Image (tube, rainbow, N blue to C red; front, side, top):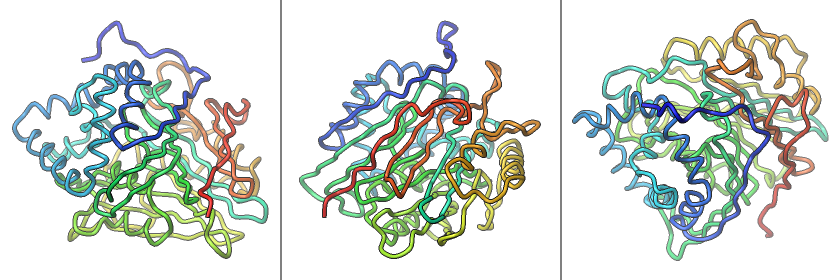
Length: 388
């Protein structure tokens, strides 16, 4: 249960950043040690963790689901388990709490066929592919307790031996992370020029013993090209335990700029379901938190209602062509119930914690900690790519 003395504070105009280099464990440890107070505070505030995941973990069925999933991930991606162990050790928190957060609703769905919460969680993404205007833009929407509990990790990971099922020896990336969570799930880019954002999707059937989406997107930070990205998302041999959508582009790709939206569904026959839409020059992509193409039964409730209403809002605008168009759309608060930018006071269950705009032409990542229609960016970062 949440300690009565721990309460979230109003929105801060603050996004802390860490630069770190080393092994997976080293990087995880540095993140944990640096952000220990934010991580501990988040673990106390997290409703799903304290009210659903931990109580289920303390049952035989819940522990079985946890162990099967941990064993599966350890087999595919031991390096990311090391990274998360580093974070737990650095922050001096229990590893199982962090791993349960990464399993998300796999635990309650696999044990009791229920969701931990019925809330309009999710994010909105816009990709614009026009001449001199190539943008991937994203609102990061999360449970209100995530507000002020996130940070940016810029990491360079060097391994002596090939790591995990894809034999990776070097990773270099920058990622917006929820407290205590591995990089890769929100907005990110890597030194190979992969830029991507994630929209959570809520499939109705989730699987233990598969790869939680959070580890698949963590692995995506190592992808060098579109072929590798698809291989990582398919996760052949195991497959995803849950689902999400990945919006991505490769800055170094030869030829025309292409944006892709990949809808990933829980595994069938040991590989993730995958459907990819591509936006060529002159086209755009809008995506929220509902499967638009992949035929995956979804949970009913607020996540879908919210997604439908946000898409409806987007469709009242002309097709986006510029940064100004994107800011108008992502900052919109006109909807009756589920606005695109979410901030209506202390009673909000869901808030937009940050807005990011990747500019593929000028190679920058602009981040706002408040509504971009009414505020200046907090950070504009250059996208630094690997020299050939």
